[in-house]
Structure formats: structure tokens, C-alpha cells
Image 1: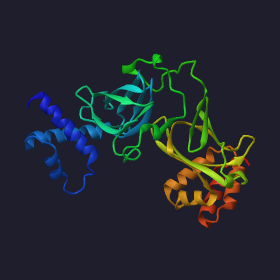
Image 2: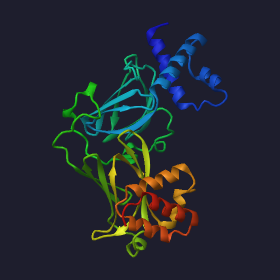
Image 3: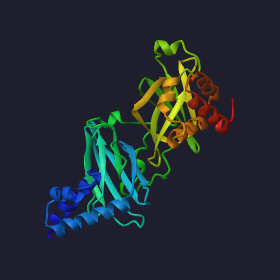
Image 4: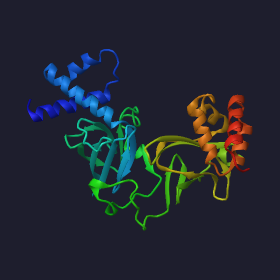
Amino acid sequence: MNENYARALLQQAAIFLDSDPGSPGFLERFAATVGGSPPEAARALDTALTARNLAGTARFAVGAGDVRTETTSSGAHLSVGLLSEGDDHLAASVRVVDSDRTALAGVALRVTDHDGHRAVVTDEAGRASLRATGASVFIQIGDFGEVGGRGEPAGAVVLPLRAAVPATTYVLAAADQTAEKSATEPSRWQTEAGGVQFTCLSRMGGSDLTLLLREDPPEVAAAAAGTHGVLFRTWGRAGSARRWIVPLAPGPLGFTGALYGTDEDWLHESSVQVYGADEIAGELGDPEDDEAGAVLARSVRHADALHAWRAMSNRITHERQRATIRAALDRHGTST
């Protein structure tokens, strides 16, 4: 079989696997979508399935001038470098190798930039190159579902919570996330989403995240500590997604809240919402749910002002959620 033809079949197979849920009728849909004779299509499917299994899952955002290498759920390594070409244009280089450092061909990666979503497939060297627009690119490998809605620009999906490392401190093809950062990198970084200003202060072993609701709606301006809170989602250094709840308390500049000792890199902009206490309880959902419990435990454990959490629990009328918050405070709260 012609090499270019085989490569085209593999790309078709990889993109099909990435988009099809695998429900009944999968083989029929595959045969109708991917051309080639049955033996050729079968080889492409086998290669793409193997690559997908070895590649595992991972997702993270990369800012202009940044280079990162992430370890996926299967132990594979996904390296992404993003270079600015000026005028909001970016050049991205991607490489995927398995846990034995063998290049993986036929791995589909979902890419989100300012213009929307698309898929790219790695070649025989495990590489893929593309052009992008905006200030950041979100990379996803494996089945995490959609990153934002269709047509939602990357700028509305993720915002940096840390300053990007200058590209001159890295070698593009061999960068590692543990590489020493430039001494000139600022330790304080600010971004804003949903009317909330986020300030990240880097520290040894983590970072502190301060939230400030500068322009208070009338119902918030007259409120007391714990009456309102902020719900939002972030991605950490390992690419894992986390949800947070931060109760707000009045301060000199406005209503504020903070998290200590986090390890968050990117903020999902459209996830930032300010809610009343009962609305937060409703958004949290069933307190017996493992995910809801993890969100609550994590948020309380990293909180700086537990009195705001206690004030919020007093204002929640949902008995089960109130009891769950108080139990989390008893387990994870270390100060009053």
C-alpha cells in the first residue's frame, strides 16, 4: 500500500475514533467514513486503537512562548511548544511518545484556539504541527468530552493563573515541566473573569490564590461574610480539572476570598460565577456524591478564612448540604 495513502487512512481512522462514541453500529459507521479496502481499513483501525490506548488521557492549556511536557494517564509523554509569530498568530509543535519513549503515530489531539476547535493527528515520528490564533491553545488527548461549546474561542475557555515562562529558557524539542524557571519570572500574576479579579502569588511548593469582587452588585454590597461565594473551575500542572468554592467576606477593597497552597495553572473563564449561599448549595448538588464531597473537602482544606465558611453554612437552608459543610469543617478546618 502506498505510504501516503496509508498515512491518510490512519489519520481518518484516528479522527473517527476521537469523534465516535463507540455505540452499536460502530463498525458500519467506520466502514462508511474511512475509505480503503477492508484489510487496509482494518490495519488503520488497529493502529489507531493501539495508539489511543498507549497515549492515555491528558489535557492542559499552553500560553504563547510556553513549552510543556505532561505525563498522561497511561504514562505516555505529551510535549507541546507554542511560539508567537506576531499579530496573535501562533505556531504549535506537538509530540507524543509512549511510556517507553517510542513515538506514537495515529494519535488524535483536540486543539482549541481563538478560532474554535479542530483535531490533528500525529505522524510516524509522533509529531504534529499546526498554526493557531490567540494568546493560548488548549490541548486535549483522550476522552474528556468537549472543551467548551462549539465555536467558543479559546480565550473564553482558559485564562492563565501563572505568568508564562519565557520561551528563551527552553529547548523546544526537549522541554520538561520541571525545568528551572527564569529568575525574572514575576511571582505575582493577575487575571479577571466573571467580574472577579484573581491574583496568584507563587510560593515554594504551591501558590496562593486571592479573589476580589471589586464591583459588587447591590445585593452583595449590603451582605455579610458567607452570604455569597464564587464557584469556578481550574486546571492544575498535571492537566487535571478541579472545581472550587470560595466564600466571600467584606474587606477594604471589596468582597474577597482566598485559597492557600494550590497548584493551579489555568482558569476556566466561563465557569466563574458569584452565587448566594443557597444557590451554591444547589450547584454543589447531592452531598453524598463523591465529586461534590471532593470539591467541598478541597475548598475547605485550602481556605484561608474558615469563619466565612461557617457563616455560609449558617445561611444555607438545605439541611443535608449544611450538615455536609459543617462535617467538612470539622474534618479539614484547622483554624477559626
